[in-house]
Image (cartoon, rainbow, N blue to C red; front, side, top):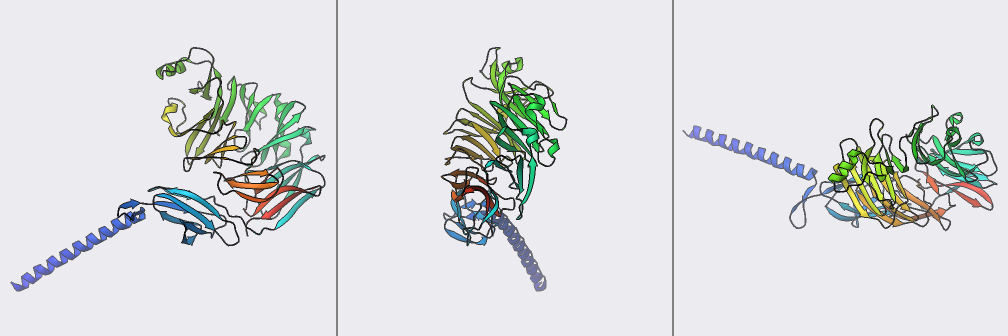
Length: 484
């Protein structure tokens, strides 16, 4: 009996031990899971979930200070942060600092992949020098090229600045531009074509230059005999253009040198991405539109009305909303992280929607409204930047920038209305002969160097800052090493 009793006791102990082991393992897994999800016990003794901060910088290896304390890891790094407001500062020996107030949200990932620190002691190198002035200068959007025209010379200069070596190509645009005065230059996203607006007396002419195959260039105005009020690249490759001419919206096929029939009439302005076209204009309401307005209690008589529309190539154009006749309307289409964004600025009222564009059976009300607010300005320009992450509203020196990553709007004033983008997350101006840059949200303002009004660009390899400057009557292209 004693032997059997001992055996039962041992069996019970073994079962209890195994149960405790299972409970311990399960508890450990649960605790580790909660820790991995960012949960911890706060100072009040409550269980709270943290947010995750991922931070990258140029250069890497910058020390991260959060709320005044140092983190042992250096950029690029990740850090769990309690929910709430935090101050962030990046420092690195030999460089200036970068700082920002951030908000961490429970269970959210906050990515900061744009902080840039500039080398303090920079070497200035003269890249090019000319006896005559540079008539116009433009920088490609990827920081890989500089295009400019020297006064009283037929040829243009294309500098390749993507690496440490600077390579020059001379191009003759006279066949397409003639003696016209060049006013502005726009690059396609592939950075191999430019649209150049020239002035011939009181008449504007638009020229498309293929920088890789000059013989494929065309004077768009003369080729199609169009009086173009607005033109833009419809595709990243630049093989299709969208133009507004005397209120008519058309598409030009560059390769075929053909122009489409009128897509829409009485158009005031348009916006597009590669797949969709939206416009503002006067329309005659269809029965479908009138029925929709009646249902919403916004009935308009059967007359010419001002509206925002989506163009459809195989059906009736799609009504988005009616607008006031006396209002200023700016529109933009963009896509960020696979989601479509529709931006409408009516006077100083800015609305941004996310979701499925109101085409077919969808309505504007089917989209998620991520922002509605009164701006300090009435924008005369809407610009989509950084692959859809940033949407900029601008009027003069005043800027309103929407960050799609954080769904946050920042408003600020710069020193000059002639802004440029030295790189995709920065806004730059030249004021009082100083090249001034700041982050897209207006923070981290820095005066970098002396420069002319043409601004500057950070090279594709992130090492150089290029700009132009007249010294002792000679025009120079300089660069400074901003990265070791």
